[in-house]
Image (cartoon, rainbow, N blue to C red; front, side, top):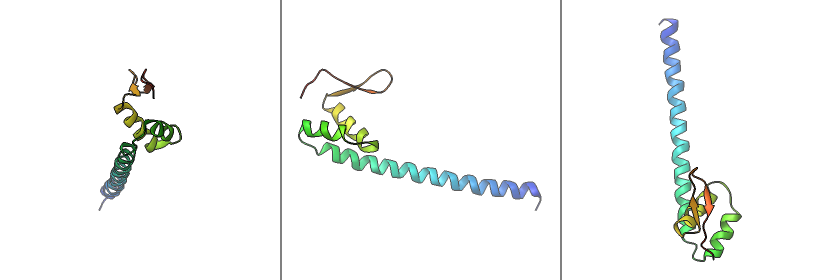
Length: 89
């Protein structure tokens, strides 16, 4: 086998492994987001939801923000960032 054939074979194997890892990470993030969204949707009290939003980070914060958006407390602006609405607790 020539050098270039070996290099292509090794490169293909490495590329495939990288793609598999990226796919696993994306599936893991999606699973965690689903769990966080379910947790956020179970919060009955709006004040408690706001408190949890303020004290969370990462995927949980995104899930709480999404739930606050559904309840009318947040809206996305033209840049896709969340902003408060005029709705009060």
